[in-house]
Image 1 (tube, rainbow, N blue to C red):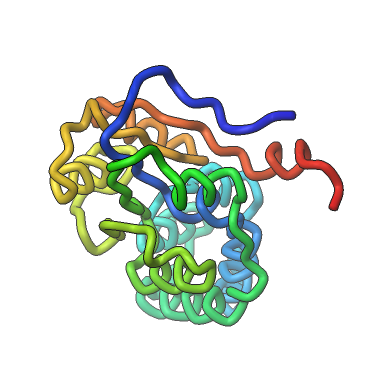
Image 2: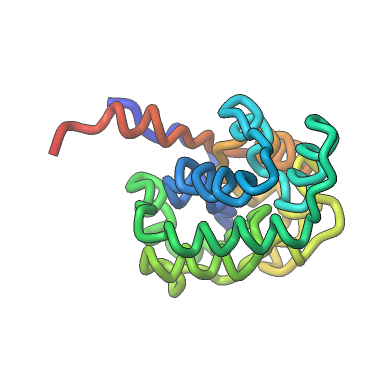
Length: 203
């Protein structure tokens, strides 16, 4: 049965992406995006949505404007998308294998969530899943200038936790997130919620 594949070695900190990693929330986020974009007549294909995973909301609106020749107000789309996601949040489930790693890491392992989403969205997701109490730090879109694939998000988390980058293990579902972890000098665990779902026995 497929599961998470851990690199060898011991680590002082686990750094988790949120959407698509801790939370099997990407389909819900896509629905929220489609609702927010509908009044503007803007498409958001599966290919672009998953290909841009890890980008901040502002950056995604900018890319959509450029691709479709639109002038959607970033703040307006941002607010509409976040409101839609919060309303759809009851449809989100945790990724069991990652939730286990978050709840029960090796002794004395520090834990942070490092996300391209706004802090309010991350906190609401963790609270809904009952995981807020397991996290030492949250690094969200407001906390860095250069988002993934730049290393700044994960390096910020390492600094806040007081752990050397080489002793941090990143859990990520997105290519941009893996590139960010690599640039930060960290090892990683690739999370594929769809493959993990397929590998679990039927309830």
